[in-house]
Amino acid sequence: MEKTYILENGLLERYVLGELSKVENQQIEAALNKYPELKTELEAIETSFETLAIENAIDVPTSVKPELLKNISNATSKVVSISSQNTLRPYLKITAGIAAVFCIGLIYMFTQLNATKKQLRVVEEENTKLNRNIENLNNYLMETNKWYVAINDPDVQKYVLKGNALMPEATVISYVNDAKKSVVINTKRLPKLDADHDYQMWADVEGEMINMGIIDRNKDMLAMNYIDNTESLNITIEPAGGNDHPTVSQLITNVYLK
Image 1 (tube, rainbow, N blue to C red):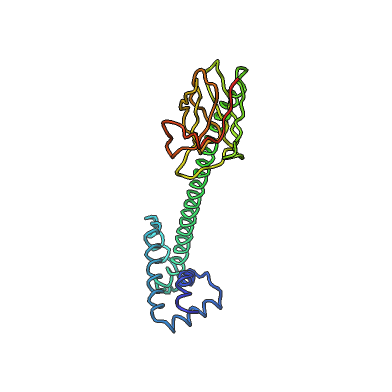
Image 2 (cartoon, rainbow, N blue to C red):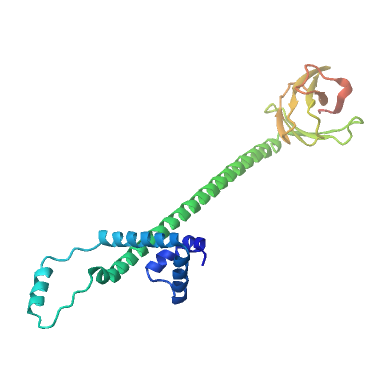
């Protein structure tokens, strides 16, 4: 095994905890002989585990020591002294293993918590988008309903303005309500103009052209200014922003009212 692979995969810790197979143990030991820095790292890990085990050790009850000494003094067999370090090492390994498992559990829980937080953020973002879409849909429905009510009023008179030779493809449908003094137009079939020009609507009252407003190029349905005693509706092409008087040569459509 290469040194980098061993360090990146935490094999030294598993070696100390006795979690590797026999073959893996042999490979680790060969690497320890090959890389002195690995042996230094191993000693540091063992020291850390032993320190962790000692810090988390459970105190022995005070009654155990006198009882143990009494049993030893009464024993007839020979007592053989065993190195405390060798006796404690298996227990330290077990304790260190438990602590390591506990740490791994904490890391797993922390990872799961972060994943859950990320999922919650995604859900919140999706909810925000959904709420925005619902709001836009509600606004669209309200707008549509407003126009539907306006053009289906019993007092509404419908007039179709068809394009002349200057713009034969143009068609504008107007809905005039003299009772409620409103004019609504549908410009969906009105060709788009360049940025330097706008459509403008005019009301002919006894030979005088009165401005009814600029036609918004970004809307298919819109309300125009209502002018009393209008005899005809007229649409011209004007410079962007509109004009104070109609350019007769740029008249594209008109219709006479009943």
